Length: 257
Ligand code: ADP
Ligand code: MG
Image 1 (cartoon, rainbow, N blue to C red):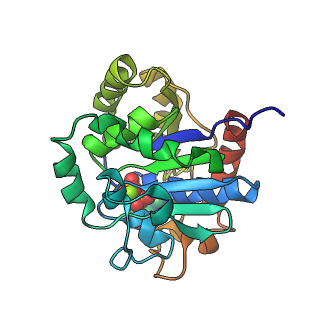
Image 2 (cartoon, rainbow, N blue to C red; image 1 turned 180 degrees about the vertical axis):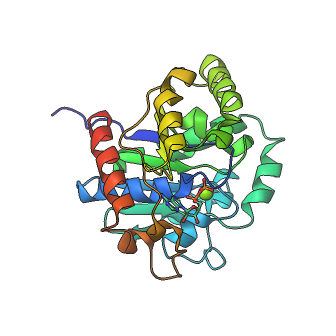
Image 3 (cartoon, rainbow, N blue to C red; image 1 turned 135 degrees about the vertical axis):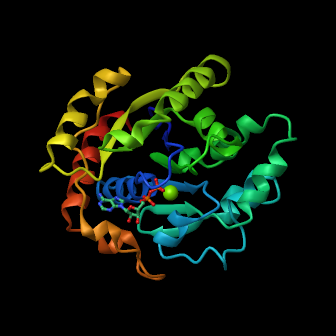
């Protein structure tokens, strides 16, 4: 019998905050799960927005990304089921401390690759929600990843810093992970009525020499409402225009899983 294809590991990163990394991870996860895919999410941000947005209180999780990357807990013991087909390795505030502790650990760039490997066969896709920095955990995410999605707000000012991210990607590819592929830039919070946004969208791919994923994710009020605990974005975002756009992006990615 042919072996099942190894799970794709997709890092969603941009060291700028507020560009919809977390929203992208949660929405793509929901869309992949609708296609029957088994999805693993890893929250790498000490602010734990992904964990929170999936209806899990980061203050009460016992085992989190923190313990797993420090080797104090097994990945399998720390996973929680966020919804049908979607498991989460939750974050807690302690993760900021873990980042500091990892700085003196040998092999720190490989820590996520190694812990994901333990469970990779159980999933079709692993999505890594990076923090807004190019710190140790983001480097570890890029080292573990087979693909990178860069969410970017579809207006000029938010593009500063992308050059730095792409330099980092080049270094990671050269020294740590030859397999890392930039899947593309994902334009988020797009306002199709604004000439400015349309112009920026038009020259985005050319400027960075990267694919631009389509369709762009429209700015919608549904995403701006912070979900309350116990009510996850996976349940609430279902029918919005934004969720629909994410579904189309996810469909475009399915052949790569
Ligand atoms: P990041 O993880 O990059 O910091 P988030 O996903 O947390 O970004 O999004 C930042 C804020 O923007 C959140 O309040 C989120 O609800 C909101 N947001 C995300 N995508 C959209 C969108 N398409 N339209 C409107 N608001 C959005
Ligand atoms: Mg985030």
